[in-house]
Image 1: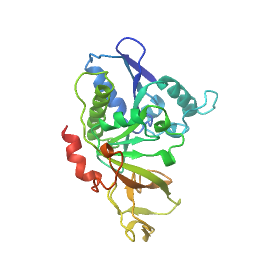
Image 2: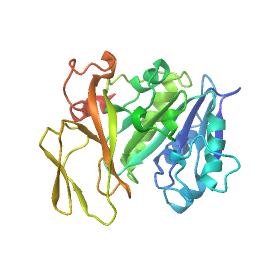
Image 3: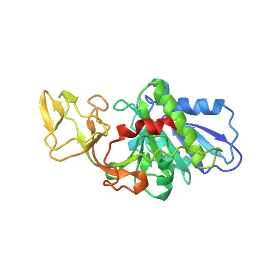
Length: 281
């Protein structure tokens, strides 16, 4: 684990990249930021977490780091020991974790147990939407106090690096590390209700679009050519046939713009309609 500190004193702010080694955008955004030799108003840590997996270009070496938190320093597994070290490193910090995905090209944020601190961070990131993962957050970094994650865009793309860098700068402005005003895109808030799992050896194809409403009775995916039909309306999140070995994606409910506190009657549009506004700031 690499830990770079900018500014003088004990940092209360952290940025974490490369939790997964096949998602290099966070590490590259940190490298880009450090190369600017930034002048800061308060200290911050910039952490490249899973160096071994990053060097190999794989999600993890022995265990998924983002399912192993808070970790175990005595574990035989590398990522479980690393999870403990990472949890210790960000303790007491307002933190931004940077990820990427194969299921969606725009940047969006992930939270759990949304509180005022996390809401303030999320409200000033240049993202199209905020996803509350409280219902399925066990072992993820979003469970940690003061921690917000982003999915910066498509895994391995230059756009994901650019989005990650923009979110990093906005986060550091929001937390007072950098001067300047962060954006205020007012993204939509989505609450995950449940995970949708895949069966091994079967072939899946996704027909629905992430963050776009799936109506009752609509076919949102097929498995071996047979339709998967929605019983009730939902909004897909991280839904992809190829994104994960056992996970197809998540069902969520749209709660409305973040500024309304999650009132779905205030604005019934999906995240795609707000994407251009979020990225123009």
